[in-house]
Image (cartoon, rainbow, N blue to C red):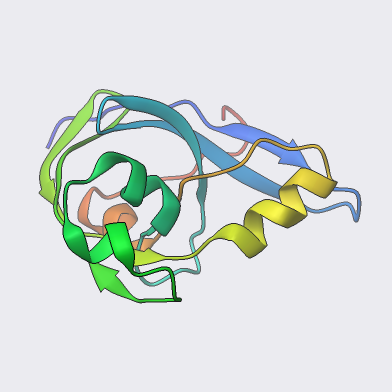
Length: 127
C-alpha cells in the first residue's frame, strides 16, 4: 500500500486538550470529521445519513439507533473507499457541545477500523 498523506486540522479546546479533524467526502458532501484513535468503529451522524440516503430505515425512525448502512464511496484525502459500512448514531449531543464552543458541526467520527485498515500514522508535528 502506497503512503498517502492526509492533512489533519488540530482544534484546541478550552481545557487545554484538542481534537483532530480531517476532511472527508461522503455522498458528494465535503465535511470535517473527528479522528478518534480510541473509538473502535467509525460512526456517521444519523441526520447526515437521513439527508443523503434513500434508505427508508432512516427516513421515518427518529429514535436513537445503531444501524449500519453502505456509503457507496467515502473519500479521505486521496483514499477512496468503496461500499463503506459505518455504524449510524445520533451525534447531536456532540454537535451541541461543538456549537457552544463555536466549532463546526461534524457528520462522523473516524475510528480504529479505518485507522487500522489503512495503517494510519498520526504525525502531530507535521499535522
